[in-house]
Length: 88
Image: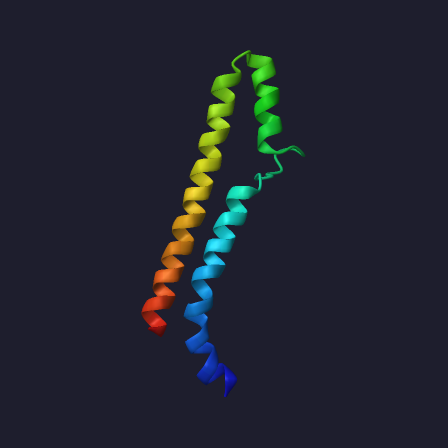
């Protein structure tokens, strides 16, 4: 009864705050991608030290972070729309 009556009505109400929380957590934390045991910013620092072009490396790392966050936020928005269409 709970899964058939209450959960479908509560799910859309829970979805919006949870996607916002996921989005805010993603923005607040640094993305740690294991690329040979180091995260992205450490690799950018190493590349900047070897190429003597720190601005290029950090801009590239920032663009990668931005693209990944954009992908995650778009996926969450599409999921939210799909759930709202189904339950509302």
